[in-house]
Figure 1 (tube, rainbow, N blue to C red):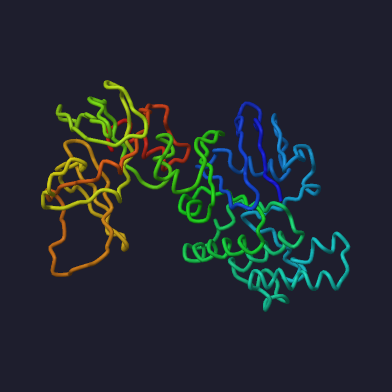
Figure 2 (figure 1 turned 90 degrees about the vertical axis):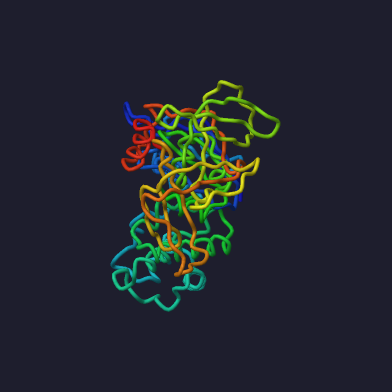
Length: 392
C-alpha cells in the first residue's frame, strides 16, 4: 500500500469552482475523512479520486503511479455510495461475488473469498437472502464486503451512514472501524456530520468553498482550530472578539465590549504573541466553562464573569445554558456527572458566575466579517447571528 497524493487539484463546472487547488497527502492504511457543509466540494474530491470526475487541473497519484486519467475500473479503488447500489435481483452471496465473477475467477476461489468477506462483516448467515429482505445496516455491510472482495488499495465511502437512524449509525461507525483495522487498507470517508468524522478518523480535513481550511487529527482540529470557520463548524464554540491590551510572558489581556459601553477584561494563554492593539478572536468551547451561583475563589489563571441565565436546555448527558453577560451571550455545557435531587437546580433569570482556565481558550488571529457565511443554511444563520447581532 502507498500514500495517496493530491497535487494542485481543481475541478470546475463552468463558472462554478467546486474544488480549488487542493494539495494533500493521505497516508496508506489510515482512516481519513473529508468534512464540510453541503456544497463544499468534498464529494467532488472523492469522485475525482474514484475516477468518476476528471480534474480540471492537477494530478492524483497512488505512490509513484499517477492515476489522474485512468478510468475507474483500472484504479485499485472501490467506492461505497449512499444508496449502496446492491443488485436487487441477486442474493447477498451473488452481490458479493459479482466482482470476482466479472474477473472470471475459479468457483472454489469465489466461494472461499465470499465466505471470508461475509464472515468479516458478520453476515455469513444471510448469504441466500435478497437485498429487500435485509435491513439498512445489513445492506451497508454487504456493500462493504462487495467493495473489499477485489482487494482494493483504497476504499472510498460517500456518506455511507446517511440513510441510517442514530443508534444504528453509531453502531455501524464502530463496525466500520473494526473492519478497517481488520483489512488494513486506506479508507477515505466523506461526511457533513462532525461527530461521525471526529469519532471515526485517524486524520480529517475540514473543507469550505472548495478549499481545505485545516487538516490533522480530530482532537487537534477541535482543540486548536486554525480559523473561525474551523472553530465554528467543528462542534460548538463561543467566539470572543476583542483588542489585545497587554502581552505578558505566558498570557495576554483582552478587552472586549459587552454591548453596554463597558469592556470585559479576559486573560488568555496564547500560542502566538499578538501585539497590543491587535484585534483577535478567542475560541472557548462550552464544556470548558464552569457555571455556579457561588462566586469562585479568585486565581491568577482563572477568568470570571458574572451573568444571567437566559435559557436552559436539558439534553440528558448534559444541560446547556445560555448566559447573558451585558449584551454578550455564552453557551455553557454542564455535564451530569452526578445528580442530587435534593439540590436546587439553576433556574432562568438567575445570576451566575462563569469561570474557566485561561489555557482553555484558543487564539485565532482572525476577526469575523460579513463574508464569513458557512454554506450550510443552519450554519450560515448561526454565524450571521454572531456577526450581525454581536452574539458570542
